[in-house]
Image (spheres, helix red, strand yellow):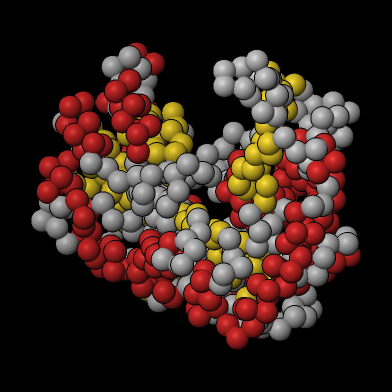
Length: 496
């Protein structure tokens, strides 16, 4: 399978060092570029991908079987992210500029201090399998790092190599035409290439989206270097959902339809899939969900490896004496690369007794209903719950006061807390938080989606008593870029 977009040959492990060295060579020049220049690069990349959306979607569908409508939309999300980060760079508040003028009368005397964020340098990005565009070669990690002023070397996912090469070719060509320095962006392939990237001394940080096992191995490499570097890994997430007694009584069928759509979306291969759903004991939600799932249809998963792991995970979940089948057949759910939905149910007592087995992510179209007796038992279950990207609560208005402790518990274990909604579907906005406590991510202080994803690729630097001519533009006294800044404790808006 080839495409006329795929004009560049793969870059393998033997050439990783050269790609990183090229990135390091231009790192200072990239960091010194103006916001408008980097914004122009990002928009040029977005325009090129949009211009080839049909061809890109076709190549990706042949490799992933995700379907042309989904993939066409994902290219749009990808280019939307690139353009959003162009706006982030131009707006300027991401630099967190703070200026405190000298005050000799302070105790102790205060020097002139000017603080801003500066790009780290060359970074490595590991592409995901389940989003071949939005979390891949030109996805959010790459867009935010380029926006920050960091050269990027992407490690392509083996699940869609042709899609990665085509995307990489378009981005490289667009950046070159827009005047970006050669070496600022590269794509490499291969398992060994990934390890070389993480351990290369020129790489200053790593972004990763993938499995818990793979992410943990790379995380250990990153922090085990002679010079440890940040590893921003999105790993695995159960994304618990709580259905209140009132919500199930008032709208069980509606909730069942919503849950079915969410846990089967993309054949259950979303990092935000609701994998665990707490339901009131005796509420009858199992019956409503079985009716909503109906006779499950098969759909094609991303690749053979994911299908095999899904089959193994289902077998492990269904093996317990306290686990019952609500819909589907765990033993027959997977046939080759195709899978059909399965719903299982168990109790809080069983989860507390077999936490490691029942609270392990099963990536695919399945969800586990956990029956709770009362609020106290629900809180007991949530107290030991692993970190997640999201947590959701469906409740009726007259229950809000009673369920406030549940909101507190969910806030403690997730990066995004949702009311009366489902976790699949992550808006790309300034306010988004896509991260959470371990094992959802390795760095819960940060997000991989939204404007503040750029913060991962920056470090603060304070300049003390430097002459104005030595200072970077964002902290110069006359504010030549017109950025929003905090000066002597007071916020000052941007100006033309």
